[in-house]
Image (cartoon, rainbow, N blue to C red; front, top):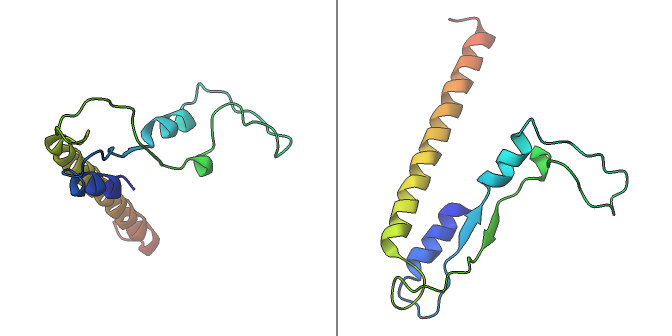
Length: 115
C-alpha cells in the first residue's frame, strides 16, 4: 500500500492542487506488540475496543496529511522526499523478504533433518 501511495505521489508531482498520500502502519503495530499495554475484553460487538489491538485487527491506513506548505510550488509533493521514501520502502521490503527466506530455509532444514 505504501509503495502504491508513493508511486501515486510521484506520478502527480506536477498536478496542481494534488495532496500527497501517506500510509500509517508501524505505530499501530508497535501498540499491538507492546507488552506493557493492557488487553481489554470486548463482550459485545457494539462495544468500543479498549486496550491494545490484536495483530489481526491491524490494517495499514492511507491518509492525506494536513500540510499547507507547497514544496513543489504546485502541490505538497516533494519529489526528492518521495524518491527517498521509495528507496527506503524498497530496502525494508527486501530485508523482510530476506528474513522470511532465511527463516523458511531453517524450518525446511529442521523438517528434513539436515543441519
